[in-house]
Length: 237
Image (tube, rainbow, N blue to C red; front, side):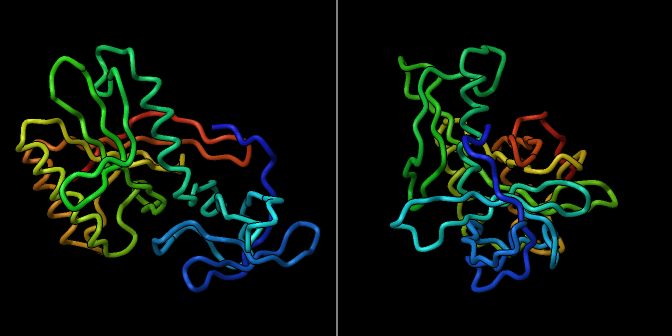
């Protein structure tokens, strides 16, 4: 993903009410930026830390700046969860005709309702049968740098727990089910569940894997110019 317009750099002062951040731009202007991230964003920023923002001239917007990434622990971290599915779809599209890929497909649907949940993607691998591949995506920003491993979640997630249950039901019904962690930082070498934050989620993640739900951990390189896929990382239970 290349940004059509250059991102605007600034220094973040604080984040409040979850969706707002005060940022001082390079020209000295203080702005309020929209924060498109419902998580805690723990371990992704510090006061006066460098951040990159998208600027919009749309007069209908209440806030013209949107926080996209932060520079913390010597790496850029993608915190804009609204971009996550775009990044993953770009990757899925690149796998479409690769018969050896678990993501090979003939068609792709987004935001598919399953049970009481809405999952991010549904791949049809063969239109002549009813077998589908359902994929739920989670954006990962937090890391244990001493390891170094990406970790998820950064706060207790009842919604994520619900998605794991739906994926297990999908697998039991004879379809393919996957959980795709989109790791938006280049400074880690593996992934693990954050048992110290949400042990119930980590336990259910292991149960899901044991039930046949596939766990994928994709890593992206993040810069103010481009966010690009790097590689798949191992999941360390």
